[in-house]
Length: 134
Image (cartoon, rainbow, N blue to C red; front, side):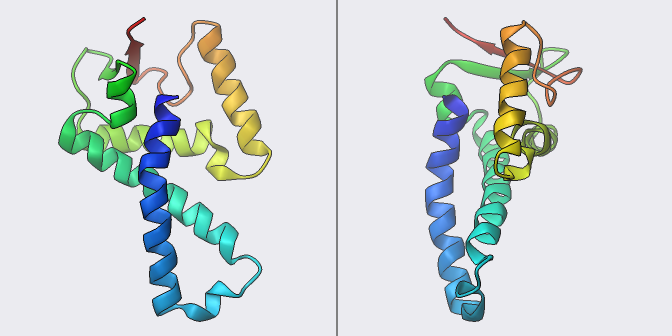
């Protein structure tokens, strides 16, 4: 839930801005049948990048703060913005399978099964510890 809240809080304004920029600077792309998928994919990667910036600047994201979730390195330290960005790349690849339809559902299910079995998500294994209050 925290991740989805963070994504929506950042994704909506980002998608609006990217759409407006494309309409202004590359209007010929807007009529192409693949344009919406490319827009979504580019926006999704940009959203994860922005989320890493928010985490680096503020020390947490709105969703994680609301749900009492903390992300630390294995030695218990707060991740740097660069470390968190690398985590976001892992989330994009392993957690969301780059947003590819159907494949992303399987990727999210696989990560959910890891968590249910008491194991870390693939993008956290050996790098980060994620804790949540009850």
